[in-house]
Image (tube, rainbow, N blue to C red):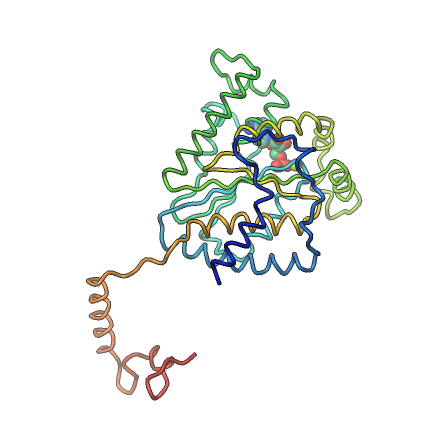
Length: 320
Ligand code: AMP
Ligand code: MG
């Protein structure tokens, strides 16, 4: 049953995966309006079961305490990163998840190598870390506005194709290193159309409770739409690797973006297939000794094991 589920999820996300080594042209290769042939009602139902599945796997991931998962979410403004995180992670134990948002780097952060601030927010074993924006900003916003590099005080900086190639290589190596050490990197790009972005900006202006989300800077950034499409295309082509592939998720329909994101994360967790640790024979003996000692402490008139008494029928069978 679970295997069938895993297969179906793998099939579902396959068209979203950027094949390592392929050359992506975003506008040509991926349609932001795609719904995968689903209706909204079906999608919402799928998301519900996906959220349950994630909760179960996250518990196992934490119990096994061997692997960690890093999910990077990238999108253009109004792409729906916040809502996706809220919905997809709604079922999981908050103790096992940490969300980090990355903004314009601080003076302290600029005093270090560019990956430093991201490395500080990596997951521990057993945890899921979510990056709301990620180290990929270093080849996106910084690529579209190379003047930002001056603040990074790089020695011998010559900005150009060679420089960005080097950054892609460094990022690929870093992710390879993390994967080899038990930390899986899941990368999702929420792919929004220009027209849907316009609609969402206007919604932020029209609804008073959405006004706080509006930023004039976002509208200014929209002028660089084509440059961003180019930067995203180059990034997807150069950094979708065997160990950490990119998934391009159509984002014009929020419900569909959420189903896809849950599916990609579930796929990774199912691939790790974390198991609850088995108690070794010696440790099991210790448990039995502890159990006997606790049972001996039972006060007059109380069952030796109140839990077992409550959950076992008179003929010794387990109650459901
Ligand atoms: P928001 O996520 O809407 O709160 O905006 C965060 C802002 O920080 C965006 O405009 C990003 O482009 C910007 N930002 C994130 N990372 C970097 C970076 N490494 N360098 C410069 N700007 C960044
Ligand atoms: Mg913003």
